Length: 300
Image (cartoon, rainbow, N blue to C red; front, side, top):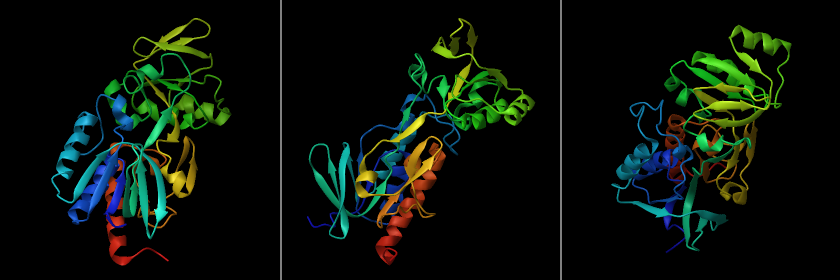
């Protein structure tokens, strides 16, 4: 086949990638979706806040999206990890872990992010079950119960200020952050309790075990993870990054174009904070923008 084997390759078959590919498929463009099968929200039982899908399993939403996408005859699905990317002859090449290589005129990177949690025993085992990062995604289901916020950085203050709308909040500083006088006053006004003793472990449903031997039972814990790109492709292509409070993410413009002409990005990989609803919206924009660039050309 020629360099134009596909019009667009979408790397990532979760919500953002599915949304982008659907726009392109409906424009009757040849699309390849490459998916490593690692949705970021795979640890959570249910997805919330996405219009028309509230409370459904994330896997079910993704599976239905894939089934609908694959009804379009110009779409091909390839399972596997994309490990190499390069600009080539006016387009791009993507190589998979199995050594196969595919070519397209445009790329959409919907590769997602990986979460790095503090090394506290019991925390990772409860990720997505009783330990969360997004109040909008999981706060309501805690039924105004006891909520812990585990500090990881000064940005955790923002978390602690928000969460009283969902329950009674204890802010575990854990040596990661010390609020100043103004911040302490604002937290007190929101009814947030401050706990300065270090956290030793998390047990039970979400019981916080402190170094001094005390245990505080919580109905749920919120923690800001450190984010890392789940794929090396953006770095290999030379895409510019933004530095956010939780890690680096891809810099894009309003049309989801990256700094590399012909490469678009969507979903968690290209925003400071993510959700299924944001990912789907980003994907729709990236897919439409990639399609229009095939017609009108790329910016000079």
